[in-house]
Image (cartoon, rainbow, N blue to C red; front, side, top):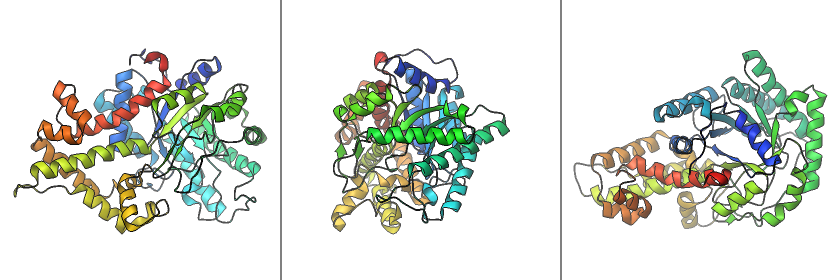
Length: 444
Protein backbone atom coordinates (compact mmCIF):
# COMPACT_ATOMS: atom_id res chain seq x y z
CA UNK A 1 0.00 0.00 0.00
CA UNK A 2 1.16 3.52 -0.70
CA UNK A 3 -0.33 6.69 0.68
CA UNK A 4 0.52 10.32 1.14
CA UNK A 5 2.38 11.13 4.31
CA UNK A 6 0.33 12.81 6.99
CA UNK A 7 1.93 16.17 7.75
CA UNK A 8 -0.73 17.86 9.86
CA UNK A 9 -1.81 17.08 13.42
CA UNK A 10 -2.83 13.48 13.92
CA UNK A 11 -5.87 14.54 15.92
CA UNK A 12 -7.33 16.32 12.90
CA UNK A 13 -7.49 12.96 11.15
CA UNK A 14 -10.51 12.08 13.30
CA UNK A 15 -12.44 15.07 12.00
CA UNK A 16 -11.20 14.36 8.49
CA UNK A 17 -12.66 10.84 8.61
CA UNK A 18 -16.09 12.27 9.41
CA UNK A 19 -15.76 14.98 6.76
CA UNK A 20 -14.83 12.54 4.02
CA UNK A 21 -17.60 10.13 5.00
CA UNK A 22 -20.13 12.95 4.75
CA UNK A 23 -18.74 13.77 1.29
CA UNK A 24 -19.47 10.21 0.21
CA UNK A 25 -15.90 8.93 0.35
CA UNK A 26 -15.41 5.58 2.13
CA UNK A 27 -12.63 6.50 4.50
CA UNK A 28 -12.01 5.25 8.01
CA UNK A 29 -9.43 4.65 10.69
CA UNK A 30 -8.87 1.53 12.73
CA UNK A 31 -8.32 1.64 16.47
CA UNK A 32 -6.11 -1.00 18.03
CA UNK A 33 -7.53 -1.61 21.49
CA UNK A 34 -4.63 -3.27 23.21
CA UNK A 35 -1.98 -2.77 25.84
CA UNK A 36 0.13 -5.67 24.57
CA UNK A 37 3.63 -4.56 23.57
CA UNK A 38 3.91 -6.85 20.53
CA UNK A 39 0.51 -5.78 19.23
CA UNK A 40 1.29 -2.09 19.74
CA UNK A 41 4.63 -2.45 17.98
CA UNK A 42 2.93 -4.13 15.01
CA UNK A 43 0.40 -1.29 14.74
CA UNK A 44 3.15 1.32 14.88
CA UNK A 45 5.11 -0.50 12.19
CA UNK A 46 1.99 -0.58 10.01
CA UNK A 47 1.71 3.19 10.32
CA UNK A 48 5.36 3.56 9.29
CA UNK A 49 4.85 1.36 6.23
CA UNK A 50 1.72 3.22 5.14
CA UNK A 51 2.78 6.75 6.05
CA UNK A 52 -0.40 6.99 8.12
CA UNK A 53 -1.53 7.61 11.68
CA UNK A 54 -1.62 4.97 14.42
CA UNK A 55 -4.72 5.07 16.65
CA UNK A 56 -4.07 3.03 19.79
CA UNK A 57 -6.59 2.77 22.60
CA UNK A 58 -6.53 1.32 26.07
CA UNK A 59 -9.68 0.01 27.69
CA UNK A 60 -10.72 0.92 31.19
CA UNK A 61 -9.91 -2.62 32.30
CA UNK A 62 -6.47 -2.71 30.69
CA UNK A 63 -5.16 0.68 31.82
CA UNK A 64 -6.51 2.83 34.61
CA UNK A 65 -5.48 4.90 37.60
CA UNK A 66 -4.87 1.73 39.63
CA UNK A 67 -2.85 0.10 36.85
CA UNK A 68 -5.50 -2.20 35.32
CA UNK A 69 -4.64 -5.74 34.32
CA UNK A 70 -1.76 -4.43 32.17
CA UNK A 71 -0.19 -2.76 35.21
CA UNK A 72 -0.19 0.63 33.46
CA UNK A 73 -1.64 4.03 34.26
CA UNK A 74 -2.65 6.24 31.31
CA UNK A 75 0.57 8.26 31.69
CA UNK A 76 2.72 5.14 31.73
CA UNK A 77 0.81 3.72 28.76
CA UNK A 78 1.50 6.89 26.80
CA UNK A 79 5.18 6.75 27.69
CA UNK A 80 5.37 3.12 26.60
CA UNK A 81 3.73 3.80 23.24
CA UNK A 82 5.86 6.85 22.51
CA UNK A 83 9.04 5.00 23.44
CA UNK A 84 8.22 2.16 21.06
CA UNK A 85 7.31 4.65 18.34
CA UNK A 86 10.65 6.45 18.76
CA UNK A 87 12.51 3.15 18.47
CA UNK A 88 10.97 2.41 15.07
CA UNK A 89 11.01 5.99 13.78
CA UNK A 90 7.34 6.95 13.94
CA UNK A 91 6.96 10.63 14.95
CA UNK A 92 4.76 11.31 17.96
CA UNK A 93 2.52 13.60 15.88
CA UNK A 94 1.38 10.52 13.96
CA UNK A 95 0.03 8.80 17.06
CA UNK A 96 -3.45 9.21 18.54
CA UNK A 97 -4.12 7.71 21.95
CA UNK A 98 -7.65 6.89 22.96
CA UNK A 99 -9.56 5.56 25.93
CA UNK A 100 -12.11 2.81 25.29
CA UNK A 101 -15.12 2.07 27.53
CA UNK A 102 -14.23 4.95 29.84
CA UNK A 103 -16.92 4.64 32.46
CA UNK A 104 -17.94 2.62 35.50
CA UNK A 105 -17.50 -0.87 33.99
CA UNK A 106 -14.37 -1.94 35.97
CA UNK A 107 -16.03 -0.88 39.24
CA UNK A 108 -19.60 -1.92 38.39
CA UNK A 109 -19.93 -4.22 41.41
CA UNK A 110 -19.61 -1.22 43.69
CA UNK A 111 -22.37 1.29 44.21
CA UNK A 112 -23.01 3.84 41.48
CA UNK A 113 -21.50 6.74 43.44
CA UNK A 114 -18.17 4.99 43.93
CA UNK A 115 -18.06 3.54 40.41
CA UNK A 116 -18.79 6.90 38.80
CA UNK A 117 -16.21 8.63 40.99
CA UNK A 118 -13.61 6.11 39.79
CA UNK A 119 -14.76 6.64 36.21
CA UNK A 120 -14.32 10.39 36.59
CA UNK A 121 -10.81 9.87 37.94
CA UNK A 122 -10.01 7.71 34.92
CA UNK A 123 -11.39 10.26 32.46
CA UNK A 124 -9.27 12.94 34.11
CA UNK A 125 -6.16 10.73 34.02
CA UNK A 126 -6.64 9.89 30.34
CA UNK A 127 -7.03 13.49 29.22
CA UNK A 128 -4.14 14.67 31.39
CA UNK A 129 -1.97 11.95 29.82
CA UNK A 130 -2.69 13.25 26.33
CA UNK A 131 -5.45 10.92 25.14
CA UNK A 132 -7.19 12.63 22.21
CA UNK A 133 -10.21 10.35 21.83
CA UNK A 134 -12.49 9.25 24.65
CA UNK A 135 -15.26 6.67 24.40
CA UNK A 136 -17.79 7.71 27.04
CA UNK A 137 -19.37 4.39 28.02
CA UNK A 138 -21.85 4.81 30.87
CA UNK A 139 -24.15 2.00 29.75
CA UNK A 140 -23.04 -0.51 32.40
CA UNK A 141 -25.44 -0.77 35.36
CA UNK A 142 -23.80 -0.56 38.75
CA UNK A 143 -24.68 -2.74 41.70
CA UNK A 144 -27.41 -0.54 43.17
CA UNK A 145 -28.74 1.05 39.96
CA UNK A 146 -32.47 0.96 39.13
CA UNK A 147 -32.87 -0.96 35.88
CA UNK A 148 -35.48 -1.24 33.19
CA UNK A 149 -37.36 -4.46 32.53
CA UNK A 150 -34.65 -5.67 30.11
CA UNK A 151 -31.90 -5.06 32.67
CA UNK A 152 -30.53 -1.90 31.01
CA UNK A 153 -30.34 1.65 32.31
CA UNK A 154 -32.70 4.37 31.05
CA UNK A 155 -31.27 6.37 28.15
CA UNK A 156 -31.66 9.60 30.11
CA UNK A 157 -29.50 8.28 32.96
CA UNK A 158 -26.86 6.96 30.57
CA UNK A 159 -26.78 10.34 28.83
CA UNK A 160 -26.49 12.37 32.04
CA UNK A 161 -23.61 10.23 33.20
CA UNK A 162 -21.86 10.57 29.82
CA UNK A 163 -22.25 14.35 30.05
CA UNK A 164 -20.81 14.32 33.58
CA UNK A 165 -17.72 12.41 32.38
CA UNK A 166 -17.39 14.74 29.40
CA UNK A 167 -17.48 17.73 31.75
CA UNK A 168 -14.59 16.21 33.74
CA UNK A 169 -12.60 15.69 30.54
CA UNK A 170 -13.24 19.24 29.32
CA UNK A 171 -12.29 20.72 32.68
CA UNK A 172 -9.08 18.67 32.76
CA UNK A 173 -8.08 19.87 29.29
CA UNK A 174 -8.69 23.51 30.24
CA UNK A 175 -6.69 23.18 33.44
CA UNK A 176 -3.78 21.56 31.58
CA UNK A 177 -3.91 24.12 28.77
CA UNK A 178 -4.29 21.44 26.09
CA UNK A 179 -6.79 20.90 23.29
CA UNK A 180 -9.93 19.07 24.44
CA UNK A 181 -10.48 15.54 23.10
CA UNK A 182 -12.93 14.07 20.61
CA UNK A 183 -15.70 11.87 21.98
CA UNK A 184 -17.56 8.70 21.12
CA UNK A 185 -20.97 7.94 22.58
CA UNK A 186 -23.54 5.15 22.35
CA UNK A 187 -26.10 3.54 24.61
CA UNK A 188 -26.24 0.18 22.80
CA UNK A 189 -22.64 -0.88 23.20
CA UNK A 190 -21.24 -4.40 22.64
CA UNK A 191 -19.70 -5.87 25.78
CA UNK A 192 -15.91 -5.53 26.04
CA UNK A 193 -14.09 -8.65 24.88
CA UNK A 194 -16.65 -10.19 22.53
CA UNK A 195 -19.78 -12.29 22.97
CA UNK A 196 -20.42 -15.51 24.81
CA UNK A 197 -21.30 -19.12 24.00
CA UNK A 198 -25.03 -18.43 23.81
CA UNK A 199 -24.68 -15.49 21.48
CA UNK A 200 -27.00 -16.75 18.73
CA UNK A 201 -27.48 -14.21 15.95
CA UNK A 202 -25.67 -11.01 16.82
CA UNK A 203 -28.04 -8.04 17.03
CA UNK A 204 -28.11 -4.83 15.02
CA UNK A 205 -29.15 -1.75 16.97
CA UNK A 206 -32.66 -0.55 16.23
CA UNK A 207 -32.65 2.77 14.40
CA UNK A 208 -35.38 4.19 16.66
CA UNK A 209 -33.20 3.47 19.69
CA UNK A 210 -30.31 5.30 18.00
CA UNK A 211 -32.43 8.38 17.31
CA UNK A 212 -33.63 8.51 20.90
CA UNK A 213 -30.13 7.93 22.30
CA UNK A 214 -28.51 10.67 20.23
CA UNK A 215 -31.26 13.14 21.09
CA UNK A 216 -31.04 12.31 24.81
CA UNK A 217 -27.27 12.67 24.83
CA UNK A 218 -27.40 15.99 23.06
CA UNK A 219 -29.95 17.29 25.57
CA UNK A 220 -27.76 16.12 28.44
CA UNK A 221 -24.69 17.85 27.01
CA UNK A 222 -26.55 21.10 26.38
CA UNK A 223 -28.11 21.04 29.85
CA UNK A 224 -24.65 21.36 31.44
CA UNK A 225 -23.19 23.82 28.93
CA UNK A 226 -21.30 21.35 26.75
CA UNK A 227 -22.52 22.60 23.37
CA UNK A 228 -18.94 23.02 22.12
CA UNK A 229 -18.02 19.52 23.28
CA UNK A 230 -21.04 18.12 21.46
CA UNK A 231 -19.51 19.32 18.19
CA UNK A 232 -16.54 17.06 18.96
CA UNK A 233 -18.70 13.97 19.37
CA UNK A 234 -17.62 12.26 16.18
CA UNK A 235 -18.91 8.70 16.47
CA UNK A 236 -21.68 6.54 17.80
CA UNK A 237 -21.16 2.94 18.93
CA UNK A 238 -23.86 0.54 17.79
CA UNK A 239 -24.29 -3.18 17.36
CA UNK A 240 -23.51 -3.83 13.70
CA UNK A 241 -24.22 -7.56 13.64
CA UNK A 242 -20.49 -8.26 13.45
CA UNK A 243 -19.53 -10.21 16.55
CA UNK A 244 -17.47 -13.13 17.77
CA UNK A 245 -17.83 -15.66 20.55
CA UNK A 246 -15.18 -18.13 21.72
CA UNK A 247 -15.93 -20.48 18.82
CA UNK A 248 -18.06 -18.55 16.30
CA UNK A 249 -17.60 -15.43 14.20
CA UNK A 250 -20.83 -13.72 13.15
CA UNK A 251 -20.23 -12.26 9.69
CA UNK A 252 -21.12 -8.66 8.92
CA UNK A 253 -24.33 -8.37 6.90
CA UNK A 254 -24.66 -5.03 5.13
CA UNK A 255 -28.36 -5.53 4.42
CA UNK A 256 -29.18 -5.57 8.13
CA UNK A 257 -27.31 -2.28 8.62
CA UNK A 258 -29.10 -0.25 5.95
CA UNK A 259 -31.69 1.41 8.26
CA UNK A 260 -28.80 2.66 10.40
CA UNK A 261 -26.85 3.74 7.33
CA UNK A 262 -29.80 5.78 6.09
CA UNK A 263 -30.03 7.44 9.52
CA UNK A 264 -26.35 8.31 9.92
CA UNK A 265 -26.19 9.82 6.44
CA UNK A 266 -28.54 12.53 7.69
CA UNK A 267 -26.54 13.35 10.83
CA UNK A 268 -24.05 16.14 10.26
CA UNK A 269 -21.08 15.20 12.43
CA UNK A 270 -21.45 11.52 13.35
CA UNK A 271 -20.18 8.26 11.90
CA UNK A 272 -20.39 4.79 13.43
CA UNK A 273 -17.74 3.17 15.57
CA UNK A 274 -17.85 -0.63 15.34
CA UNK A 275 -16.60 -2.81 18.16
CA UNK A 276 -16.05 -6.57 17.90
CA UNK A 277 -14.91 -6.42 14.27
CA UNK A 278 -12.16 -8.94 15.04
CA UNK A 279 -11.88 -11.90 12.64
CA UNK A 280 -14.11 -10.32 9.99
CA UNK A 281 -13.04 -10.85 6.37
CA UNK A 282 -11.26 -8.10 4.41
CA UNK A 283 -14.36 -7.73 2.24
CA UNK A 284 -16.61 -7.34 5.29
CA UNK A 285 -14.37 -4.71 6.88
CA UNK A 286 -14.22 -2.70 3.65
CA UNK A 287 -18.01 -2.90 3.38
CA UNK A 288 -18.36 -1.60 6.92
CA UNK A 289 -16.34 1.49 6.02
CA UNK A 290 -18.59 2.02 3.00
CA UNK A 291 -21.55 1.75 5.39
CA UNK A 292 -20.30 4.80 7.34
CA UNK A 293 -18.37 2.87 9.98
CA UNK A 294 -15.62 5.45 10.26
CA UNK A 295 -13.84 3.70 13.14
CA UNK A 296 -13.12 -0.04 13.19
CA UNK A 297 -12.07 -1.46 16.55
CA UNK A 298 -9.75 -4.48 16.78
CA UNK A 299 -8.13 -6.04 19.82
CA UNK A 300 -8.37 -9.79 20.50
CA UNK A 301 -7.53 -10.61 16.86
CA UNK A 302 -4.13 -8.97 17.38
CA UNK A 303 -3.21 -10.92 20.48
CA UNK A 304 -4.76 -14.08 18.99
CA UNK A 305 -2.32 -13.78 16.09
CA UNK A 306 0.51 -13.22 18.55
CA UNK A 307 -0.47 -16.33 20.52
CA UNK A 308 -0.60 -18.43 17.34
CA UNK A 309 2.94 -17.37 16.44
CA UNK A 310 4.35 -17.79 19.94
CA UNK A 311 2.88 -21.25 20.47
CA UNK A 312 4.11 -22.36 17.04
CA UNK A 313 7.56 -21.08 17.96
CA UNK A 314 7.35 -23.01 21.24
CA UNK A 315 6.72 -26.20 19.25
CA UNK A 316 9.65 -25.34 16.99
CA UNK A 317 11.79 -24.74 20.08
CA UNK A 318 10.83 -28.09 21.55
CA UNK A 319 11.51 -29.99 18.33
CA UNK A 320 14.81 -28.28 17.55
CA UNK A 321 16.26 -27.80 21.03
CA UNK A 322 14.34 -30.11 23.36
CA UNK A 323 16.93 -32.87 23.28
CA UNK A 324 19.86 -30.71 24.34
CA UNK A 325 20.81 -31.04 28.01
CA UNK A 326 22.44 -27.61 28.04
CA UNK A 327 19.23 -25.82 27.02
CA UNK A 328 16.13 -25.29 29.12
CA UNK A 329 13.07 -24.94 26.89
CA UNK A 330 10.49 -22.29 27.69
CA UNK A 331 7.46 -24.61 28.04
CA UNK A 332 5.41 -21.50 27.20
CA UNK A 333 2.07 -23.18 26.34
CA UNK A 334 2.19 -25.32 29.47
CA UNK A 335 2.99 -22.34 31.68
CA UNK A 336 0.15 -20.29 30.20
CA UNK A 337 -2.26 -23.16 30.84
CA UNK A 338 -1.16 -23.43 34.46
CA UNK A 339 -1.60 -19.69 34.97
CA UNK A 340 -5.12 -19.73 33.54
CA UNK A 341 -6.20 -22.74 35.59
CA UNK A 342 -4.76 -21.28 38.80
CA UNK A 343 -6.54 -17.94 38.27
CA UNK A 344 -9.75 -18.55 36.25
CA UNK A 345 -11.35 -15.16 36.87
CA UNK A 346 -10.62 -13.80 33.39
CA UNK A 347 -12.12 -16.71 31.43
CA UNK A 348 -14.47 -18.90 33.44
CA UNK A 349 -17.61 -16.85 32.73
CA UNK A 350 -16.81 -16.92 28.98
CA UNK A 351 -16.07 -20.63 28.46
CA UNK A 352 -18.41 -23.57 28.98
CA UNK A 353 -18.18 -27.31 28.38
CA UNK A 354 -16.25 -30.33 29.60
CA UNK A 355 -12.79 -29.99 31.08
CA UNK A 356 -11.32 -31.04 27.72
CA UNK A 357 -13.43 -28.51 25.84
CA UNK A 358 -12.51 -25.68 28.20
CA UNK A 359 -8.83 -26.59 27.95
CA UNK A 360 -9.16 -26.23 24.17
CA UNK A 361 -10.90 -22.87 24.54
CA UNK A 362 -8.29 -21.51 26.93
CA UNK A 363 -5.75 -21.91 24.16
CA UNK A 364 -7.71 -21.51 20.92
CA UNK A 365 -10.86 -19.42 21.56
CA UNK A 366 -11.47 -16.39 19.35
CA UNK A 367 -12.17 -14.32 22.47
CA UNK A 368 -8.51 -14.91 23.41
CA UNK A 369 -8.91 -14.61 27.16
CA UNK A 370 -5.31 -15.78 27.42
CA UNK A 371 -4.36 -12.17 26.63
CA UNK A 372 -5.04 -11.26 30.27
CA UNK A 373 -2.15 -13.46 31.45
CA UNK A 374 0.81 -12.32 29.34
CA UNK A 375 1.81 -9.74 31.96
CA UNK A 376 2.25 -12.37 34.70
CA UNK A 377 5.93 -12.67 35.67
CA UNK A 378 5.95 -16.42 34.94
CA UNK A 379 4.52 -15.81 31.46
CA UNK A 380 6.99 -13.05 30.70
CA UNK A 381 9.92 -15.15 31.90
CA UNK A 382 8.86 -18.06 29.70
CA UNK A 383 8.34 -15.78 26.71
CA UNK A 384 11.76 -14.18 27.13
CA UNK A 385 13.38 -17.62 27.42
CA UNK A 386 11.65 -18.71 24.20
CA UNK A 387 12.88 -15.64 22.34
CA UNK A 388 16.40 -15.95 23.72
CA UNK A 389 16.64 -19.67 22.85
CA UNK A 390 15.55 -19.16 19.27
CA UNK A 391 17.75 -16.09 18.77
CA UNK A 392 20.79 -17.98 20.02
CA UNK A 393 19.89 -21.16 18.11
CA UNK A 394 17.97 -20.21 14.94
CA UNK A 395 15.83 -23.19 13.91
CA UNK A 396 16.02 -24.82 10.47
CA UNK A 397 13.92 -23.16 7.76
CA UNK A 398 12.13 -26.43 7.01
CA UNK A 399 10.89 -26.62 10.60
CA UNK A 400 9.68 -23.02 10.55
CA UNK A 401 7.89 -23.62 7.26
CA UNK A 402 6.15 -26.68 8.67
CA UNK A 403 4.70 -24.78 11.65
CA UNK A 404 4.45 -21.25 10.17
CA UNK A 405 4.23 -21.62 6.38
CA UNK A 406 3.83 -17.89 5.58
CA UNK A 407 6.81 -16.93 7.72
CA UNK A 408 8.86 -19.76 6.26
CA UNK A 409 8.21 -18.59 2.72
CA UNK A 410 9.12 -15.00 3.58
CA UNK A 411 12.35 -16.13 5.22
CA UNK A 412 13.17 -18.23 2.16
CA UNK A 413 12.67 -15.28 -0.18
CA UNK A 414 14.58 -12.87 2.06
CA UNK A 415 11.66 -10.61 3.04
CA UNK A 416 11.70 -11.73 6.69
CA UNK A 417 14.61 -12.55 8.97
CA UNK A 418 14.82 -15.83 10.86
CA UNK A 419 14.19 -13.97 14.09
CA UNK A 420 11.50 -15.03 16.58
CA UNK A 421 10.30 -11.53 17.41
CA UNK A 422 10.20 -10.60 13.73
CA UNK A 423 8.12 -13.70 13.06
CA UNK A 424 5.64 -12.74 15.80
CA UNK A 425 5.32 -9.18 14.53
CA UNK A 426 4.86 -10.42 10.97
CA UNK A 427 1.98 -12.63 12.07
CA UNK A 428 0.25 -9.70 13.78
CA UNK A 429 0.97 -7.51 10.74
CA UNK A 430 -1.20 -9.81 8.64
CA UNK A 431 -4.12 -8.52 10.74
CA UNK A 432 -3.16 -4.84 10.82
CA UNK A 433 -2.68 -4.80 7.04
CA UNK A 434 -6.28 -5.94 6.49
CA UNK A 435 -7.60 -3.08 8.62
CA UNK A 436 -5.34 -0.52 6.98
CA UNK A 437 -6.56 -1.54 3.52
CA UNK A 438 -10.21 -1.47 4.57
CA UNK A 439 -9.85 2.07 5.95
CA UNK A 440 -7.99 3.46 2.93
CA UNK A 441 -9.33 1.58 -0.11
CA UNK A 442 -8.10 4.14 -2.62
CA UNK A 443 -4.53 3.67 -1.37
CA UNK A 444 -4.50 -0.12 -1.64
